Image 1 (cartoon, helix red, strand yellow):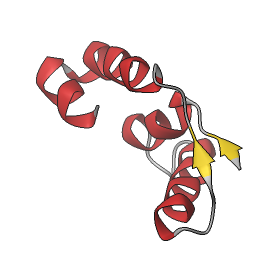
Image 2 (cartoon, one colour; image 1 turned 45 degrees about the vertical axis):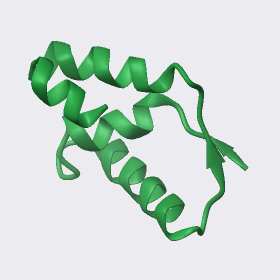
Image 3 (cartoon, one colour; image 1 turned 60 degrees about the vertical axis):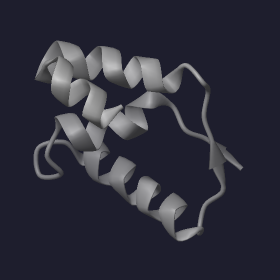
Image 4 (cartoon, one colour; image 1 turned 90 degrees about the vertical axis):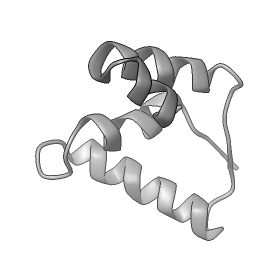
Length: 67
């Protein structure tokens, strides 16, 4: 089982796959989780971290949507 930190959720939202290789890797990881190919968990604070970063970069409305 893999631990998924907030950066795995943030990289695909904040960066394009062409600009940042970590964004592609993070998106691939999320897709594997969605398909059931990778078992993973995260902390309860991850959602707060995502909203905090998104709010600073995208604004409140989009941050709540992404969270």
